[in-house]
Each structure stands twice: as C-alpha cells, then as structure tokens.
Amino acid sequence: MSAESARPKGIALSDRQRIAWLRLIRSDNVGPATFRDLINHFGSAEAALAALPELSARGGATRAIKIATEHEAHRELEIARRFGARFIGIGEPDYPQALRQIDGAPPLIAVKGDVSVLHRPAVGVVGSRNASISGAKFAAMIARDCGRAGYAVVSGLARGIDTAAHRASLDTGTVAALAGGLDQPYPPENVPLLEEICEGRGLAISEMPFGWEPRARDFPRRNRLIAGMSLGVAVVEAATRSGSLITARLAAEFGRLVFAVPGSPLDPRCQGTNGLLKDGAMIITSPEDVIEALAPLSQLDLFSAPVAEEPAGNGNDLTPPDDSDRARIADALGPTPVEVDDIIRHTGLPAPSVYLVLLELDIAARLHRHPGGMVSLAMGD
Image (cartoon, rainbow, N blue to C red; front, side, top):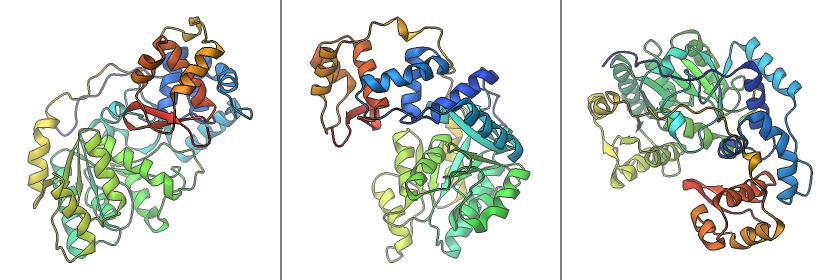
C-alpha cells in the first residue's frame, strides 16, 4: 500500500458559499442532517437562510429563530485564520472521504495542521483514560505499526490510551478529534501534545465553533468523528460505560471494523473490551492483526460516491402544503420514532410535501431525529 492514497476529487466552495454555509450550520436548530435537507430542498445555503424564518413560523415555533449573521461568520473565519486553522466543506477535496459517507456528516470541519494526513486511510485507536502501563504500551504499538504501514491514526486527545496512540504516531501522521472548538482543547495537560501534532505531520479537527468549551454531551460527537474517519477502530481498554464503547458502536453502525484487545475479567478497564468481543468484535493480540484486517479495505475505493455540492435545482418551486396537510403529518407523528416512508404511506401525501413539513417542524424545534433517518415529535409536543 502506498503511504498516501490518491487525492480525492471535490469542488471548492467560493468565499461567499463558505460564509453562507457557516451561517447556516451555526443557526438555531440546524444540525448536519437538517443542513443537508435544507441544501437539497432550497439549492443553496443562501436560499435556505432566507427561508428559515418562514419555515420556523410554519412549523409552529413559539419564538423567532436566531440566524447567524454575516458578521458572526466573518468573525469566526478571522479567528480561525489567526489561529492557523481553516474550514473545509463536505464537498471539498480535503474533506475526509470516509467521513463524508456517514449519516449526518458535519458539513463543515475546522482543521489545523497538515491536511495531507486526511488523504490517507485511517484507523482509530481509543481506550481508557486511566490506562494500565501494558494497555498504553500496546496502544502505542498498534499506532506505531499502523502508521508505518501507511495509516493515519485517529484518536480523541484524552488521557491514557489516546495520548499513547497520538505520541506513537507523531512521526507518521495522527489526527486529534476535539469535542470543543480547536482553541479549547481538553484535557489542558495535553495542550503541548496537540501543539506537537499540529506543528508536525498531524492535524486537529473539530466541528464545533471556535471558543466552544467542551461539555459532556459534546464528546459523543467527537467519538463520531473518530469512527467516521476510520476504516476500523481498535479499543484497547474500556470500562463498561466507557466513551470508547460509543466510538465502537458508531463504527459498527457505519460499517467499519471493530477491534478489541482481550483483558483480565478481574480488571474493570477490560470489561468493555471483553464485552465487545462477546458481541462479535475482532480479537487483536498484535498490531499485525489490525493491519492484516484493514489491508483489503485500504486497497479498495470504498468512498467514491459522487461529491456533495449545492444542487442546481431550487425547492422553492414546490407549492407549500396547506394547513390540513400539516395537521395530517403532525397527527401521524408521536413520541415513537417512525420512518419517513411510513409517514408518506400513512398520510397519502406526496413525498416532497412530507419532507417539507418535517423540515418546518425541525426548524421549529418540534421534531427529533433518530439514527437511521427515523423521526418523532419532540418532547412536549
């Protein structure tokens, strides 16, 4: 395998588009999946931004939606520039090919460092924050040997296993996925390590705004980045309720390989990894196990789907559903997640009308999205 995969194709955003994309993803009630639906329906981020107030009102919002301003977007871009970082859109060449394929991929990522590492196949290495000496040593062995075999090593900059994996792959290429903004790394003691990563052959990546201090609920999004970027994820040590198990579960949902290192049943740090093995994860007792399992995948062009871009169409040509249609769709929803196709069959309404009403409810914060594209009414409705 060559040390670096072929540079993926893509279409660069214009400065105007990048501002509009940043405004849209930073606006109230717009997450990655909603962003995608808005672009698909309205044809561009600018058109979607103009439609947000009306969508929110039709969806039954009780207060005006807050839309990020051009000034705020320019300010964040300037902060990124001064920080030595930049934003990459999902359809651009430097966006990680594997990440762009997952459901709800972030439309914009902020990066700092050597972007060439994003063009290589990647393996995630994660595990316990209070790692054992042997666990940290084995994680370093996996990261070092996978790096030498041409893989980028992705981890979460946490204490313990993550730190060992990053340090062992500094010379070959490592990616630190952050739960907060690029300027808010956690934990503080790993700031020097992050500087080494960004100044060398590595990269820091985040989907959160600059200045965003990570909270507990932000770390699963960080884990999603790790799983989404990787062909496979190796879990070295993990307790039963470890965040590393979230990364492993997401990797399995994305169709990626999940590796686990067996450990003593008496060590709480190994209960999670032993559980993964019971659930079908691949057992690894040497770095070669990971490299051999990933080799067939790294030779294939697994992520060659058409590049995402703003479509030429404009969803404004669709006649908006009337109030009776909205009521039928809202009545079909409840607290139990359902598939959109089931809503279409149940109501007998055209698919574009159903999708538009769901988008209205989403922007009004009255819709809850679930994995697999399922939806339900938000709590309180």
